[in-house]
Length: 120
Image (tube, rainbow, N blue to C red):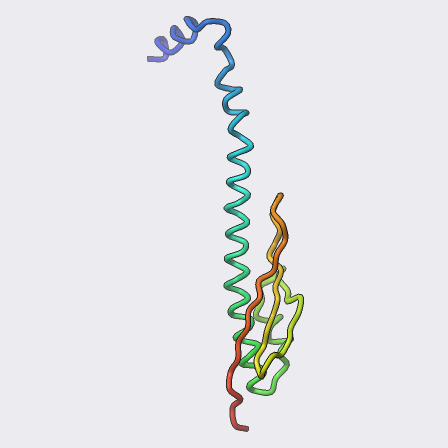
């Protein structure tokens, strides 16, 4: 079987030698962009999930009379932080930046949560 492949390779015209390498080089930018796009979507999904949990923890801390920024930062995984924490209508609103990967623009995830105050 190897002998047949060698024989076919030797029968190719000189103009076709190396054409597969050029085809691979032509498709590589598309493959790299697709991989970077998938990584950016994954980073956005992880940030969204982390922000959801952090804003709920912040709202719970507010309802218990504890420190909201401490609860939010403790809930976010390492490397993530809340750019802004606000308190609209007895709730908590946070903005968490998404990790920027490659050529894609940076953006933030904004989440809000409210929890009723518990009786002391």
